[in-house]
Amino acid sequence: MKRNLIIFVVITTVISVTYAMGLIPTAATESVSKVLHHSVNPGTLSAAHANLGDNCQACHTPVMGVDTVKCIMCHANNESILQRQPTAFHASVGTCKECHQEHRGLDANLSEMDHSLLTSIGLKALEDAEPGSEEQAARIGLADKLKFANAPHERITLQESVLDCKSCHSNDDQHQGLFGNDCAQCHATDRWTIPEYKHPSTSSTDCNQCHQAPPSHYMMHFKMISAKVAGKPHARVEQCHQCHQTTSWNDIKRAGWYKHH
Image (cartoon, rainbow, N blue to C red; front, side, top):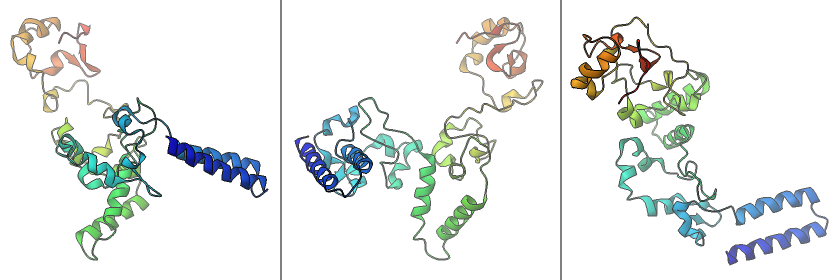
């Protein structure tokens, strides 16, 4: 902290002398001073990195700023990130600071996913592709799509929509592959739910093509409680439409909103 203070005092002195000489106006001096102050003292680190508060060089390199190489030195062996399918992409991204931003306070969230950034990283990774290779063809195709195509719906950007969602989210596919791999046709990146989604016909009797009943339905609990509550004591487990409504799984015919497990 003393070193930061010394640097700030020196810079402030230089600005003051420059202003006194009439070389820059007052407004410009104040603006530059604020920027320099933020550069020297950007703010408190998060709780995860609080122990590095007096060691700027643990993350920063002079002139360069936050250095990805230094991030990797500490996190390269984080198996929980590198071996889990949803986060395994970290091994090849090559940059950290865009999604993991520091100096925003002890309670700051260090994981703010920027899906559009992944598209930029992918394009950059393909810049050196050999002429005529599959990688070059992929880059040209991606660049053309970003230039001429439109996002499939208003809740997702074009940059986000060109990503291969299943490469990270295949374990989250509730559709069991029945709807294909183009997740962006319906989903956005901020949440899985789709506010404007319209369920198939309320008279549909094929619910179990997409929906799996909970374990309790395959036990005595279904016959003893669930089916009786709905007034359908002879219903079979696969006959979802006998008891449930499409507004919500907990919206039970005759009983209304009902949740018991």
